[in-house]
Length: 177
Image 1: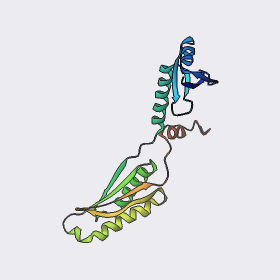
Image 2 (image 1 turned 30 degrees about the horizontal axis):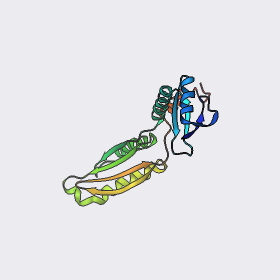
Image 3 (image 1 turned 90 degrees about the vertical axis):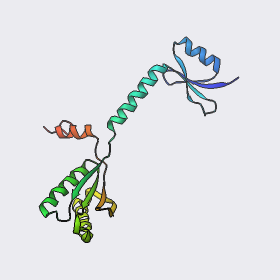
Image 4 (image 1 turned 120 degrees about the horizontal axis):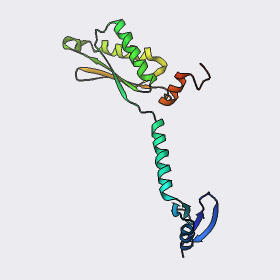
């Protein structure tokens, strides 16, 4: 006769029961017998409302997804002739993207005779990498692909979930008004 370790609806261990007795006990209480650890010796079963267990699990997974931070790849495009002020604007964009927890793809497009000066494009990529400093690290160094040179920067720290950022911005959680 197969035996199972039985746990009641409050989480109390009831001991080892025959499978038929465990099923009967669950039916008497108007609940279901749910196998929670089939590979254990003896298998562990719980007396519970199966529909409610599924509902609560679905809610926990939805809450975990809501707090999860999605990482995207944002792009900053340049040309070899991009001027210093425009470069500072692009650096600002890259810093904002990295603060939000996104990866940044720095793309330098070459046209015509600019292809002869790939070193200028590589210098621009490295200038951006140095400017973002401690916010991001180089994940893939500058390399050519056709008429474009690109480099990928990854954020160094994980951002806080969106909900936490919003409450901090309101000042309610930190005690500020």
